[in-house]
Image 1 (cartoon, rainbow, N blue to C red):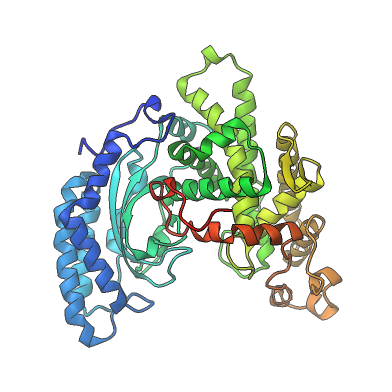
Image 2: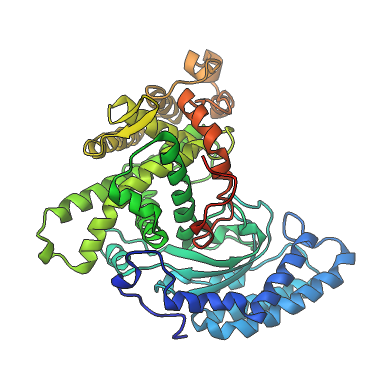
Length: 488
């Protein structure tokens, strides 16, 4: 296991982009004959499956059986490379064999899922082989078999951060090594709830592919800065030239974001519980967590910057330096990528990006003048924290409000900054029968694109669409080079 589990020193991953030795060793597994056989068999099996993961056509069962007969021994051959996952890799072989023996019905991989516990092994550079029938968020909605080879991103300063005020025992940061088609998409998460299983267990982990987030950030922000003629601060520009630095920034952002969903003054039924509601409420929840990461990064930067440098530990210096970069990442990813990614049908992340941009513009720290974008960075932290305060106050007040009243207050808050569609029933005022009726009437009255793109974003979207499309399936390695045909 030593070639796969080596703790990096901070100096080993600072500076110019490079592939350090143990990362190359992990990637060698992607060339192993057993991995290539496994991947080929999974790719061949997937077309035989239907949306629920089953193989319903009996005439396909012999072929499916042959593919499983390749998958199971391939996993067994690769298992010695991942001794920390021995129980999982044994269990997943049994799940595949049982699925085949029972006639390829709806797959049930609960037993192996319960054995997979990546949160117990957060070691920088540690590899995992993950094989499940599952859907991939922002990828495929079908529960097809996926095989993914990954490695953990867990630098020392993140371990120190998590051991302190930002504990998040469920959070796992990952980097792609290789994957099957469900991840050749926009999906950047690995969540246990996506796996095909007979019952829902208590989930103990959630993983995010920080290399994909970092790679698409670098490509999109570079193009957007060129298009808008935005002069980036030196440290923000450095992120665009350093994949590993940007990955670490996204790990810090996401670990704080993820823990924020269940913290603070929240409604009794937090927005993360699945329910039907106006999509702008999801916008506010995701933005609330991102702005919590922003404000905590400001606090960390200011607190640690006030201390003499010799008194800081190496981890504290890294936290201070990365905290500044998290602030850039939150702003640029939100206003340049989130705002114009995806369709305009109830796009809650897009709306959050629009809201942040408009708030900064209307509070005088973001300017679009003479076809050039400029940002007053010294004033940005307090202005963005003010938006965070406004959302937090909305939540605090919601504890004493009926659901419908809270929805109306949330809409009023968003519409103070963003202009609703002229045809909006919410903007004109919902009719009495809707106000007196069930929540469904409120939700049905929300337009698919309740808050359309501004003229600024309409123009930017035309120039950025191909760049954003090009980030589907991107990884840390593939993001190093700009693809042809997406230049501004």
